[in-house]
Length: 160
Image (cartoon, rainbow, N blue to C red; front, side, top):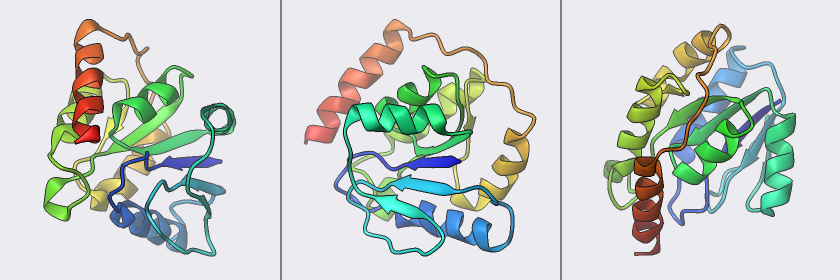
């Protein structure tokens, strides 16, 4: 099962779901896809979609998942990496009105460089990431002080 997490931002992120649906249609994704869509309104007969759920239920879904595809929010990424899951992270971008700024690009890039996840800066690269993730062995995620600072800043920004 692939779990897709779009977080709890009140901005739409249909761009990622469009690309996932495209990869289901062309056969790059054959697994069941379950989506935590947050405030993104999206209809699909190819994915099981729900808006929000409890942290406990989300952690249980992460535990069951073989792969996590997520927005590049610190909370979502940390939940997956703490369970040693393979993660593909896609940042929400300001130019698409998906977030107030592009801080998720920095989070995605930093954790990709550390080898903790596969980060893609453009949804059109999802098919490449799906091939790469099959052989990908993520490095153990070590939460650092800078990660904690990023989380605090992100939380503050999300409240603005």
